[in-house]
Each structure stands twice: as structure tokens, then as C-alpha cells.
Length: 164
Image 1 (cartoon, rainbow, N blue to C red):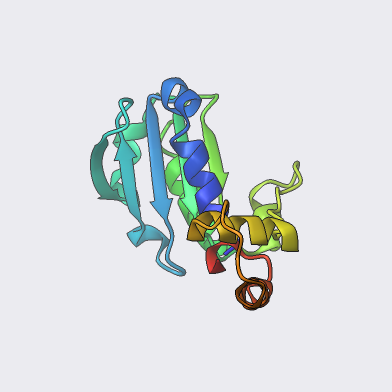
Image 2: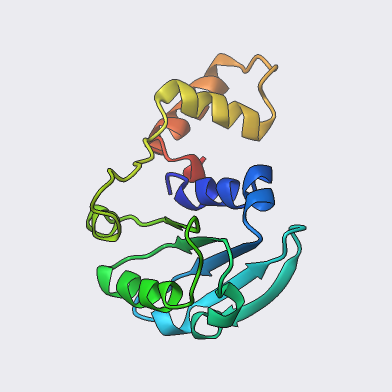
């Protein structure tokens, strides 16, 4: 993909988020299975607390400042179910929900007052630089034949970091 989950993980594990939110919750969503979604609860020190189903998580969020990541929400129905469960938990004001989705309508449904952040594809040059970094050839001069082939492969990845 373009890095939606990677960006959400960077926020989730960022030092400022860890220090600010005593409770951090990561929900990986499988389409049509919102009630069975697995939830990873993290302690403030960054260690795993426990893994629960989303319906079991309410008591852990009650009257707490929370960061909740809903990862890979593919339809508005699943979002509504999850939001109902989580918002009914009694999280305090200042808690935040981060949503990753491939679908703009889901993002707009989740928050009609803000414009969703869309991750752009990499340019050809950014893709090439990432390829060199991943392959450890940043400081190596490639043979022209090899470089031409490698650039062709990079071009076929269409700017998707995960494909590189």
C-alpha cells in the first residue's frame, strides 16, 4: 500500500503519543467483523498489556485519556459499530481516534468537519532513492545495464513504497 498503517504506527509509537495517552488501543479491522475485531492494549511504557476483542475493551477505556487507532476500516457500517462500542466506553474528552482506510467515503463519514489526509504516491526519484536505501546500494555506482533494469522495476511499482 501507500503506507497508511505505517504512518498510523509511527503516530501510535511516537514518544509524544506514548507520554500523552495513558491508554493506547490498536484495532485491526476485518471487513464485516467489527464485533470480533482484535484489540491490542498497550501500557504507557510501550509494552503489550493484553489482546482483547473490541467488545471487551470498554472497561479499560472508562474515564481515561486514550489514543485509538482503527486500522483498515473498509466500510461505514464497520466504522459505526466500532465507534459506538468505543465511544460508549466513557473515554474522556481529549481522547483521539485515528482511522486508516482505502476508501474516501469511509473517512468522510467518520469526520465530516475535516478533510481526510491522503497519502501520496512516491515520485520516480523518491522511489529510486527508497529502492537504493532498501537494497543497500545508496553509495554504490551501479553498472548502467543493472541500473536501467532496476529503474524499470522501480517504475513498475507505481510509487507504492510497500511494492519496493
